[in-house]
Image (tube, rainbow, N blue to C red; front, side, top):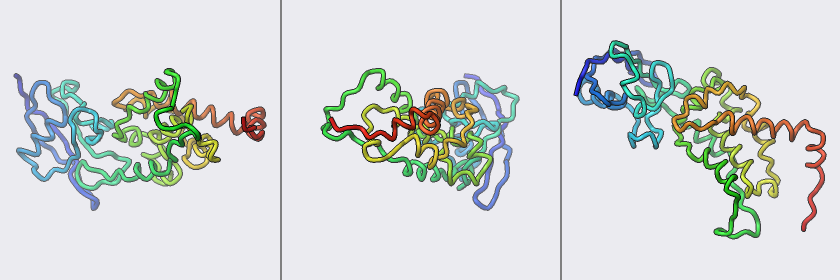
Length: 256
């Protein structure tokens, strides 16, 4: 097994401020960035704060920025970098720093609570739900989300404009709205909830200009923009501006 001395620049600090600190750390074949961060903790910086859990790319805990790109520390292999390259590891820029590489991502949990949950259809008992396989497959893609919030971090609407956070849910939760809106068993409409309208008026769908940066950083390769956000935008526009759709929404359905 070959080993080389890698050059790292890691952000150290807390809510009061901080700076990038240079380290030289041993790197072995087959390792990921999280392995090196753990070795750095064990040998040089025992107080370095980093959030992680599964080390298998499924918990979403070890989100950070590596050379400016939002990534999972445990899924970024050292082999993708030149051994002579200085690797910069910084916390997620869109969220407040707690300490070192750990950020306060509570913004995302606040937005999650603002999305109304699935509304079960009336008269259908648990275990009696039936869906076409194609509908199962459509929503299953979005269920792969591991809540790493890399898409939230890279979205420039959140990342570059702090003032937008109050009115914008971000791609992860607009994807959740899209999933519920296309769910054939969601009876939100029967309860007076129009998910397309709320996506536009309450969750800030109009702020998204489909740059696809969220899709590019998703470790689960979910096509957030193409399969969730663009179709949701199209349905929202139809709902609001298409005269036939508008008229149809005003006609009350007769009870069978």
